[in-house]
Image 1 (cartoon, protein in one colour):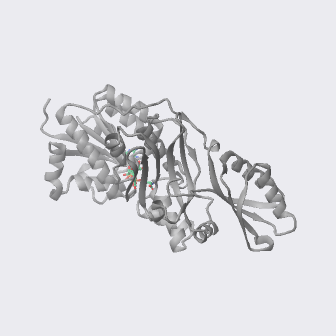
Image 2: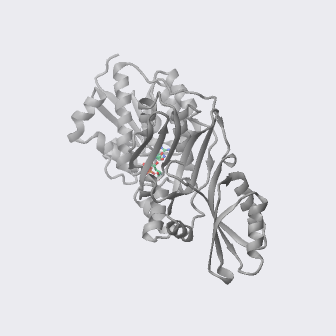
Image 3: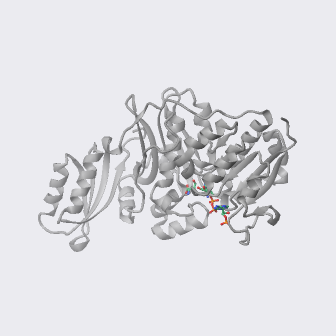
Amino acid sequence: MERPVVRVGVIGGGFVGTALVQLLLDPTRHAAIVDGATAPLELVGVAVRDTSKPHPGIEAALLTSDVDGLLSNDLDVLVEVAGGIEPVRTYLETALKLGVSVVTANKALIAESGTELAQLAHDNGADLFYEAAVGGAIPILRALRSSLAGERINRVMGIVNGTTNYILTKMTSGGSDYASALAEAQALGYAEADPSADVEGFDVAAKVQILSTLAFGTRLSGDEVAREGITGIRAVDVEYALRSGYVIKMLGVAERVGETGVSRRAHPAMVPARHPLASVNGPMNAVFVEGVKSGPLMWLGQGAGGEPTATAVLGDVLDAARNRVSGRHDVPFSGDTSLHYVPAGELSSVFYLSIDVLDRPGVLSDVAGIFGRHDVSIRSMDQSGFGDEARLSFLTHRALSSDVFATVEELKASASVESVGACIRVIDGVFE
Ligand code: NDP
Ligand code: HSE
């Protein structure tokens, strides 16, 4: 059925929602937006939690706190840029059951319920798009879904969290402490409502799961991702990395293991200073894709922030609108779901470990013995400080991760060790 306009409702009037509303209503972009959508868009309303709070940049007449009212407004496309799981999941289910296409930036929700939501969309002739959920403005999901659909991907590795990259960059080049760098990232609109999602690696883990779906055809939601955050990283680790020719980056990795396995991980890593990811700084994101025939490919761009993210949301809105006008919807992506998950412990890597010890005779041999008992060979060791301050920094040879994790547990229990600081993987080569 031909419609005169495409009716768009938005849930969320925060950093991303406000930027989206401004893009949608920008008179200088009007013709391009109509062209992209193949129809004029009508912004029906913007739902927020509390309309009495100031929402600069959104006209008061558009604001509502009645989400159900917005949903019953004969929408064509619902944009969700509110965040969290409930009540948002219920709102999206309601919309999809009504045949309304959904555009969301909510990686946490997609990683938790994406499979079911995609099925619901398909069953009801609607679209579910979530380009902004990974990499902010970077069109990486479309690239994997369309341009690389026929390519065999071996690995997707990237910096996909602006907040942690901002914090680590500030710690590396500005000498900032962790807390003030985090506060700045929050003020700039990069951080999640609960920033532990960023610094504990949940946000990266959700994005890795989504990337894994598009690269390897694994399930969109509910699959396992190994996760470590950046809260244990101290200034001394950052300095050690710099002295040794590395920078510490929070990475998301999804890669094939042999013919039948796939590994998904979110963790900090020491990246060689010459690696392309090493110079990706501040809130910038970058995604590195290694395809068999395409070779290495890399996308770089603003991974967080209201305006960059809103551009990706708008692209999805235009796709969804165009599909509505032509009476079609995209079939949900499905691929080779036979790949099995390989736990992080079964993979090997070089590791950096930092340990605080009491500087007294016998400590070094105790510590070295623990490494040896777990079959972890030491490549180099560095001691700084003395007395109560003594710190040992180790680089291992390539070792099985489970052996390194067991070494850390025994070190923690050892009377010679005061505390174990960071235990960070080291990327050895550019294409390791
Ligand atoms: P904000 O916290 O700035 O804004 C959230 C908005 O959603 C607020 O307007 C809030 O209302 C509204 N809201 C929250 N819950 C409800 C609800 N139950 N009903 C109605 N409205 C609700 O978040 P962001 O704009 O930063 O992020 C939004 C989403 O985009 C999240 O899923 C986030 O993960 C994702 N995202 C964010 C990026 C970024 O850089 N900020 C980048 C990529 C994705 P009120 O104003 O009244 O509090
Ligand atoms: N909190 C996220 C980040 C927003 O810092 O990258 C973008 O997904």
